[in-house]
Image (cartoon, rainbow, N blue to C red; front, side, top):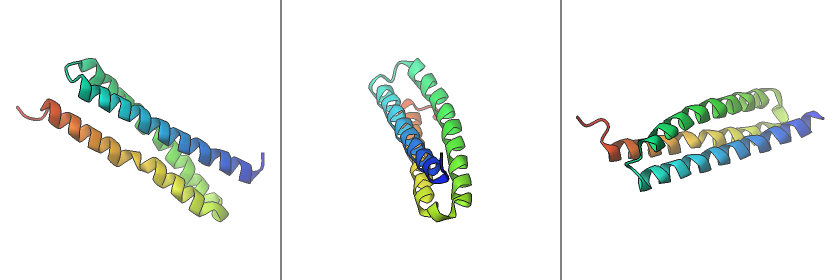
Length: 107
């Protein structure tokens, strides 16, 4: 496998991981909003967020490595990094809405 092929495959995989993370997170969020009395959904969501943070963190570190060492493809990997990091504010928004809906922080 050439360096360029490896870089392209890595970029495609990172995009697939970012989209999959977004879709699973959105499905869990919507299920939690539709069925707020099911506490298991909230617990599953918390564990999913932790798993997604780990997986997306590893992907971002790999992309940063590629960004540094594949200097001819910096723009490509920069866009891929931003795509993966775009899940962070989305997840934070979902978390904020969920926490305010269940009034977890209001005693």
